[in-house]
Image (cartoon, rainbow, N blue to C red):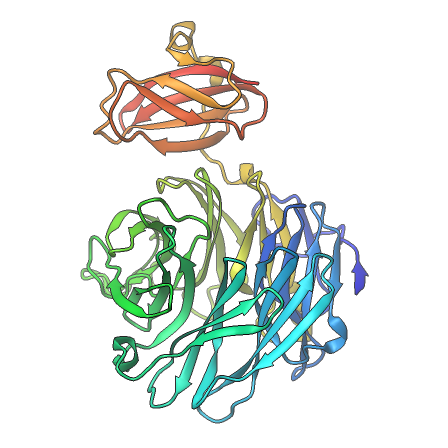
Length: 497
């Protein structure tokens, strides 16, 4: 382990947004995946270069104020890329890959690392695929019932393109089950279905798994499996306005955002509009597992016109705080633009922040704290010593993204008299909404006394009372406002104790 300290000067003079702190790295570094633990420490998996051809795996622990440690394990994982980290009951489970193939088809060995809570290595396993199969580079993993389920991509045994496979490990790193594609499976025979960047989620009702798959040049598909990893069906996600072509060609799914009716929040890019075949959009959307797009919003269209979009990343805090990140460029002479968007569960965009004008961000480049702050992980893309300052970790405040404010001094005594109870409240807040048309696109938001919007949601259903959970708010005075596109309908103050 090597102890490093926070740089006190800004590494990137082109930073356009505000920031709390930034760490710069003097060693060529790549960050691939990470999480924020219960102690508000960021645990980040990646690797560092020794030279153009050699690198070794690294785990970083970053404190709330930017102090950090680097754990390299004495080159135990030389030329292994740690690409996924999952918390366990005793520490962390990591998935890595090491290239073993050559020629036109690159293949990989799978590495499993188990760390304790202090990030010491307690187990390391290296695996090759079974039979005639070979692992590809992409993997995802989820924790379930005390085990770790790993989604892999395999090729071989007659496969023209890579197909999904599942491996189950216990928390100690021992392989206890595996499921590879079999002859006769519908998913096996779809040779034109070229998967990449698959993501794995457990269905909220416990009935199986969903793989969010990018079908190259066509768009996103949802692959449904039962608990025994038997393939059940494939569902297409289509653009609600333009159809299915290239919907979410690059995509990300927010973690822990399943709803009770099997809805997820997705982010991706769409291109090849019928009236404009050279236009790209960044889209966030609420999607059901039958492929229905319930609601979607375009984050940006003008800035992404005639641009390539990629490296979408998304991270979730609560219903009022979801971050999505992406970058775009138009040509070699027009630089990359990396942006982060803050939006709510109901697809309301609260604000965006242009962060850097250079590339270097992985698909898992956003990590979020419980208070809504966000870490941006910026990496080098290749070994170029003269560009090592592109590796950085930066913390931003949620308030840096908020663009909507309300002058709380304009709230009148009559408006304060609206029925709201209990007031003060420590948990639930009930608001009288009699006379409000709940079939219309009415919304409610909560604003602090500095004018910052803290939460926003659509008013759904029927009834005379709207109940909101405000237990996560700090003690103080807040304003609620019911509004729609035509203006404010009702507003008032309440006290959170």
